[in-house]
Length: 287
Image (cartoon, helix red, strand yellow):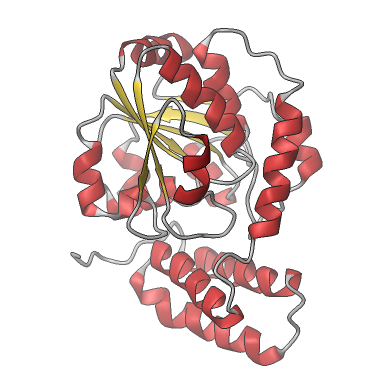
């Protein structure tokens, strides 16, 4: 794979975020051995010249090997999916596809704790219908694009919010679009995986990514994504940032995310933790 110049939104903040995220995982798993923290910290620093995505993904992979657990967040993901299912039963969205888009963006609350953000199930429930900020598109324009799209790639993200993604995916399928969901073949943090998503694939297709990086990381996958009318990308802290790091030549991507990272919020000019619907990612964000 072609090596590119290492990229960070902010080197010091992103590295501190990686350390805090991984240390937080050790702490929640009840590990108090100082050597575990120092060894994992050394891994993050050794990976740092390779860029943001590699630091986060490979430090997680090292953590799982150290713990001997392929999916250390398995129980947490089950809890999140159950909570989301119970919440969905109380929502009425009607037929307008934009209601489903806004819900998918707002549901991007789910994540492991990180620098400047701690997930709360109470906040998740309370803010699930929060109105998003629209960047580079608007409800009328997006409604038209989605109505005329013959093929849509959907890049999924975290457990819990996946139940809301399913609502949008099935609504798009009912509108006549061929929807293909791309999911990681191996676990990463609380993200859903291919094996899990296939359990729900009654009216859409599912493709497994080569590993546990974002779809935007793999050149072969990006070449495949070019062929879709639209790409819906969930999440700001991997899919969006991997897009910004790799700069794939794709101009048909709709990003649905919460600006959980204070740096991303500042970059996009929105309030921290604000849900965002964005299209036509501007070069000013990624140069």
